[in-house]
Each structure stands twice: as structure tokens, then as C-alpha cells.
Figure 1 (cartoon, helix red, strand yellow):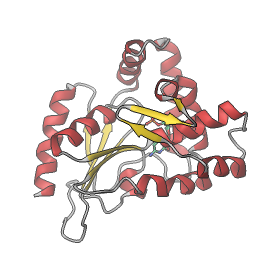
Figure 2 (cartoon, rainbow, N blue to C red; figure 1 turned 60 degrees about the vertical axis):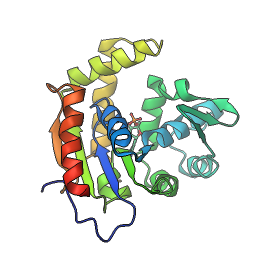
Figure 3 (tube, rainbow, N blue to C red; figure 1 turned 90 degrees about the horizontal axis):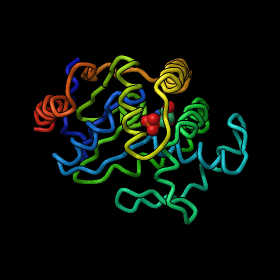
Length: 228
Ligand code: DC
């Protein structure tokens, strides 16, 4: 498929960017949102917030009812780049590797995914939305106007994530990252509820050997065709 859908029946256009951890989807989604003047949804943040809250409150990552209750209570505030929850700026904490792992574990549960669905769809507002995640094009916004799926080798992704963490002043080792990313990929791809996979109508881009600016230029050309 060509990654475009007829736009006429949808009032608020959505562009979806899905892919595994550190495939470059966050960078691409932010670049597209800025270039198009659209809102930006980083859906992983909701799973990370829930993982963070569960770790904070000692709720086991398999306790479905308790997790759904925690999800229902999430009232995040987005202040520019900062994410606040329960009166605390948790932006940096959300990026910690153990919070990513907790997010991936709670994301396996269909009841949790359902509880977070409404919060994600609330982000669909004019003039449009760029949504980044694992199931944006398959489950959350299946009627999106334009869909991308990014991939990259696991080694490249571990190196990119390492750089990001070091730049943020967080500790990181490549070998541990390689292991954690591989485990996270396996869990995200093999879960029954909304597994990580490209939508049938997504344009797949392997970013292993392509610079971020070139990925953005390619995707933007494609988006402009879809949105025209
Ligand atoms: O994109 P991220 O690394 O912030 O996502 C953290 C975890 O959240 C990821 O391993 C799986 C889960 N997730 C998901 O299941 N569906 C999404 N749309 C986004 C994230």
C-alpha cells in the first residue's frame, strides 16, 4: 500500500508514526508536527506514566484491576516540553530505562490499553495531529490520512538511545541497552493486544542508514501528497 488514505471523510487529519524503541519515530513525529503545524501525541508517554505510577506506588505490573484504576486516575498536565503528574515534574523520570520496561510490561494488558485509548484519542484536534507510538496506525487512529512505520537495526537503535540518555544526563550502557531493547521489541511484537506491526497501508522506512533530516524530508513529501 502507499501510506495514503482519501482524506475527505475525516475532519481532523492524523499522521501516524509507529515503530520499535529508538527507531527515530519521536524525532520524525516532532519534525512533522512542526513542519505541518499539527499537534503532537507521544503515546508512549501514557504507558510510561502508568509504569512510573505503578513503580512509585508498589502496584505489581501484572495486577490488571489496580493498573486500570491507576490509569483512570491519570491527570497529566503538559506544560510545553514538561510533563507533570500529581504535582511533580516527571519528564526526566519517564525517560529512565526501568520506566520504559515497566511501560512495555503494562502495555501487554488489553484492559490497560483500553483504559488509555480515550486519553490518546482526545489529542485529535484541529488543525491536525501527528501521533507517535506502536499502534497508532493499526488501532488508535486506523483512519489516519498518512501512516509511517520506522525500523532500524537493533544496534543502531541502542546507540541512538545511549546518546539520548547521556545527553539528558542519565546513566546508560550500550550492552544493557541492547539487551533491554531486544527484550522490549520481543514483548511489544508478540503481545496479543495491539502488537507492534506496520499497518497494511503504512509506508515503511528503514532509518538505519538514513540521517534524521533525510527521513523527515522524505516523510514530509509523502505527507504533503496525502494531505493535499
Ligand atoms: O515509545 P516508548 O519507548 O516511549 O514506549 C514505551 C512502551 O510503551 C513501549 O515499549 C510499549 C508501550 N507502548 C505501546 O504499547 N503502545 C504505544 N502506542 C506506545 C507505547
